[in-house]
Length: 93
Image (cartoon, rainbow, N blue to C red):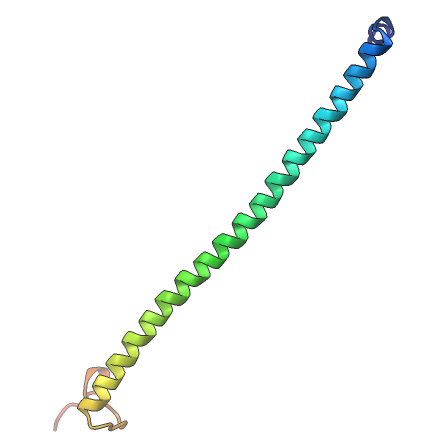
């Protein structure tokens, strides 16, 4: 059936349809490739952004902890012995 339809079309029409099919196939493959590359770039950029955000938060937490530790040690005169606060506190006899 399909062969009969193609045989009834003129050579000019068949060449035009074949050219159109090739063009649409190339356009589809180009759009697929572009979408694939954009997805990879997006994943890479999001990973870099998340790493930068986590690094910034970690640096802020580290600075805060360093400040608290230094403040605690300066209050004890730099004494690094067992602290007398928290779960380390000993009951007085």
